[in-house]
Length: 73
Image (cartoon, rainbow, N blue to C red):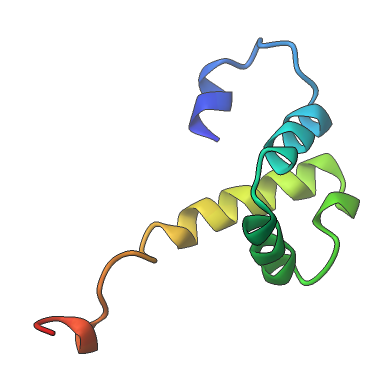
């Protein structure tokens, strides 16, 4: 989202950005996104979709970090 916010006058509508992003995802990533949002991601309105992508970006930052139980294994 930072890249989009850095170029607010890029001329693309939000729905088109969401569509480009979704279409560029692999099948497994689409499935993960659909599971996380509890249904059909592309049925969300563009603002809801962007908000959800921002949420996923925030929570996914720690996915590759080891948990306490994994340290030292």
